[in-house]
Length: 69
Image 1 (cartoon, rainbow, N blue to C red):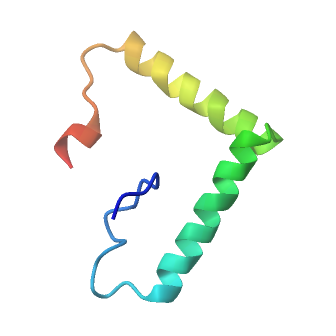
Image 2 (tube, helix red, strand yellow):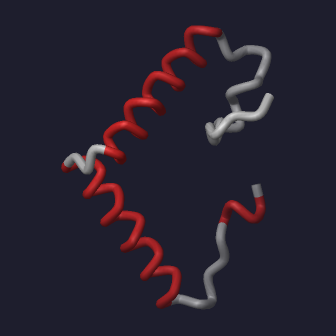
């Protein structure tokens, strides 16, 4: 199935219920809408992501954990 969602690793586990998936997808849609509407939450998230990016650039000896998952 092709979507623009970035599903968490647990999403397709057999023990994950339909209700768990529904809750996650509803929350993700709310996050996306908040980011599009430039809410205070979206500004805070963008600020946090920018800060993390600057910290990674300032410390070139660190590695991205996502590369090892």
